[in-house]
Length: 193
Image 1: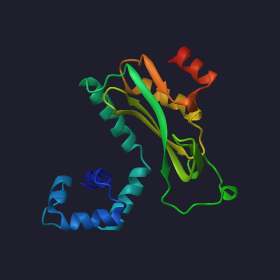
Image 2: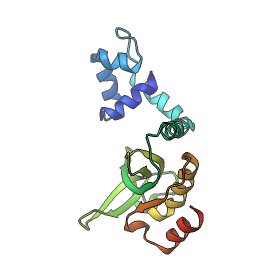
Image 3: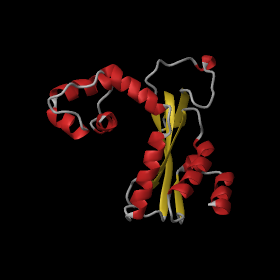
């Protein structure tokens, strides 16, 4: 029920555990859908926080995601002939730290900058979500999170490896934007994938 509630929190665009608990408190239908007792007590904000912290330390969500991709592939919901690869920004919930004070270990939030579709620089503190998606269905095949300062090219090999592991049929084409336009990316795709 706790995991279902976390999924519902994202699907319903709730902006935190407090909002989730408030919504569960006054919405019996949401409680029922998530698996809680309709007239029962709702878990506290700290319960959700502890559950999320424990969940984040495990590989459970990655295993669940990979299983869902595998099932979608088995049922023909995805057509992996053309795969699109790109990234998007994720702003951190923590307070921004000056760039000079960041001790980067490859996992912590960092400053990132990228150019939007109008050529304007966009700067943020947080992470980058790299994704490989089936073009036909729009469903993600691979997700990878990195610090915001990671260049898209640095994550492409991880995405290609995981994509090969997650789907039965090798993609015929990979579609990427200009951030991936480099000789080493072309060679990687042609020689290994």
